[in-house]
Length: 306
Length: 252
Image (cartoon, rainbow over all chains, first blue to last red; front, top):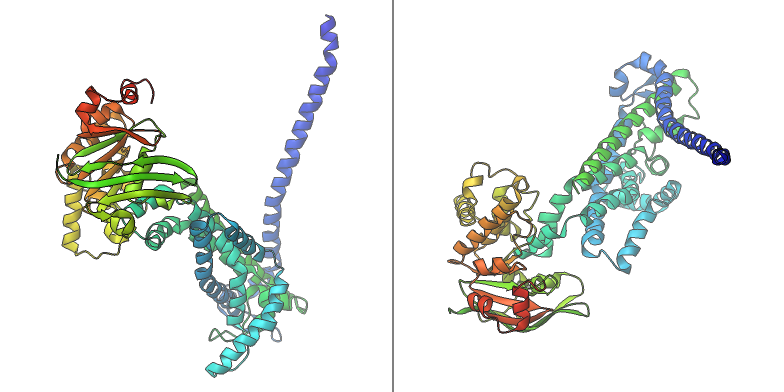
């Protein structure tokens, strides 16, 4: 009986342990849930605040290229086109470089100082504040583009779609390269050896065995890079020229969804003006979310296979 | 004994400073099955990987001594050329997962950028798959991915892929170690048939398999060639006590 009494405090402390366990679990699940709530809340508030413009313009908002704050007529087409154009062009420019880096680090030089330096530097590109990219673009890239335009005999804006795409392409390289590098390094060595045993050169093994095998992973990395490019605001705003006219060539100044919001929301006086900007935000939110979702879905499938 | 198709002179193989094959000299007779057997880790796989210069692909790996394919110095020739003439089948079946059965068979040509006519291609796929005793099982779904096949079928697909290059020698690196007994028996039977047209070098740690399929057997221990001779002679009257101990299961 004495045993029973002496063990009582232990039972008590056990209860306290259980209580702490439950509290810990609750805290974790609430924090996790909060993220979901936050995402939904952002979506809902965007939706609610864009309702005046949704009501006023309906579907024509997405197809109209007029952006006229004076007469309160708004359409998102110019910015939608600007965003897609700069993002895809950036991807196109970045892909050869990110692929080359990925193959170099993922296949040719997996170990050693050179490879780890390159890896670090590529990752570091993602850490540079975008305003710095913007500055660099403005003072270095824009003059180069202007010289090119003078040589080609086009109106030398310097700023515009091309300058924005160039700066974006540098900014998204780490996103595209890091996942491509991983999937290229994951290609099993036995299928590479099978290629060599048939008399293939290293280049043939890379292009005909490794790249097809890693294809979907490279695609996923590219989509994530695209998601990054779509939403980039500061650097693009600084070099794109902020013109609300539909661009007719890659040298034209333009605007993207993100850059028009950043530029104009402080001066958006009317209710409809502000609401239209918010609707553009809603559109951007949905596009970026979808692209990211698809990218992550592919990565999940790829990593299951590997 | 026919002519010698492959010959090594004092062949040593290293991983950095670690010597795994030690001054091996042997000659492989043409159109025969030669088995290289020995306990695991004795360097037998590394030895045959020196024959088609796959060993040197591993960082830090190097080779000393000489290898001759007929009268050609293997290490003085372009490795791509050597590898087309010395085919290889690996321990684990490794068909290219992104390619169909059909494309796997002619992968050697695709990889090397050799253009084949349509009819030529079809004929080669059929002939190679027949040689590998796989044709009847896959002829109706050549466009399916090779990885859908069973392990044994995948291994025969890999044999067909190697045979399509029409090699002088086929290296088989423990080709049945990942297969069940039934699939193993099929591959062994196939080896018997293949020696009519190609010289086979088989690596195994399985004494019984060496006895069943090979004409000549080499016993490798700790990277050294202990004994080499006609299989029957080596199995019934081994000269070295280590060979005898391995054959009777004292180690290995």
